[in-house]
Length: 135
Image (tube, rainbow, N blue to C red; front, side, top):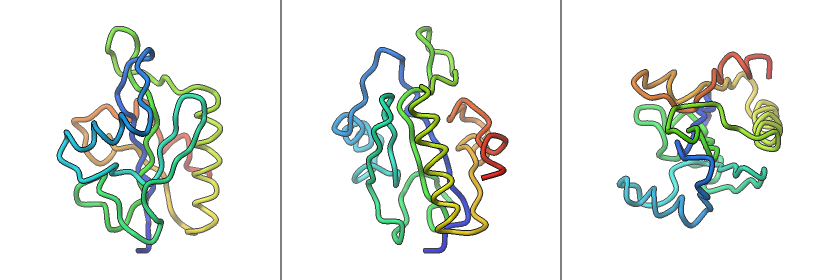
């Protein structure tokens, strides 16, 4: 796999919802996946887990899996259920570091949001392309 894109997703969960790795797996299976579809997952506390090798495609974005790396962060909704950038400072730092490191591994790769590919979605609730275009 020669990835050209990093596609960033949010779990679209409330601030009080804890989506640990096990809950993420259950949600993924209920959505029809065989396992967690993202390469990486970032919890609110900044914990990073990896779910696919970088040499293998994930199954996080239809039509783009063979040339992208999927990253998902916990959050995305405010307490009323509205799409909002709820990333914690730890998540922002971890995500920025991850995007930067992937840029070293795959020169020319660029980060975008899931909503840049599928316009009907709100995920990841911030402008990923604008935020990481210099990385």
